[in-house]
Amino acid sequence: MRSFTRGIGMALFGVVGMLNLAPGLIVLMPSKLAGVYGVVAADATSTLLLRHRAVMLALLGAALLAAAFLPSLRIPVLAAATVGKVSFILLVFTSSDAHPNLTPVALADVAALVALAVAAVIIRHPRRPAPPSDRAGARESDGRLLP
Image 1 (cartoon, rainbow, N blue to C red):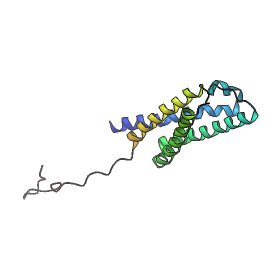
Image 2: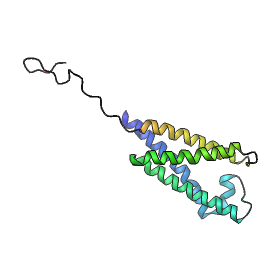
Image 3: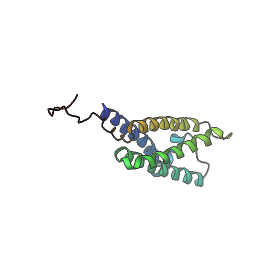
Image 4: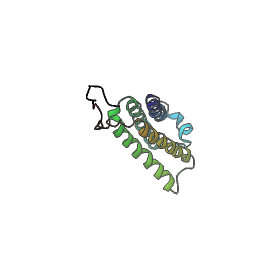
């Protein structure tokens, strides 16, 4: 059962990682910007900044995929993902002039945060076993183990 739930946690890391990798295609195909974000970049500088954002998301996606398999990466990658996603969510929902098409992107980040929180709980490092009780290993006078 434990390995099944750990597999679910790893899969959640993987799914969120793949979702973050997907925008990385914008770097290679900037013409897809409008389709991914629902907004059209106003000028070459805006396009460049959105392409850079795509690179950063792809790097985060690769890190999330690696963290699914490498426990030592999980805490720092979860911290980076949380900071990035929470900051974008706050920027979208606190900005009075944010384009309405950014709302679904921010809501996707909310869903990703929930998935990562579930994954973090499921995949947390196993706790050390409890110390043996006083009776553990106790023997009867004839050498038999006590129940």
